[in-house]
Image (cartoon, rainbow, N blue to C red; front, side):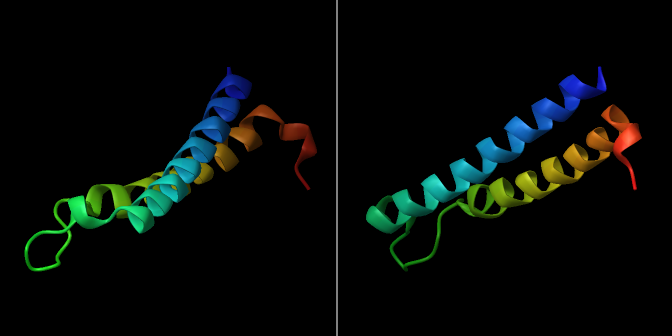
Length: 75
């Protein structure tokens, strides 16, 4: 059970990281739809800050699940 949760968190961490980098490249190439008439971002805070924060939280859960799944490898 813990091994499945550990692998799921690894996959989620990488998907969120790749999604954030992909959105950054997309924003660099085509940023006009995300800006309003004054040059401010329009509701992109959840993507810009949420994806990396989700990746960090998934990484912390990954460490916790790894310790539960493989207790014999602890120092």
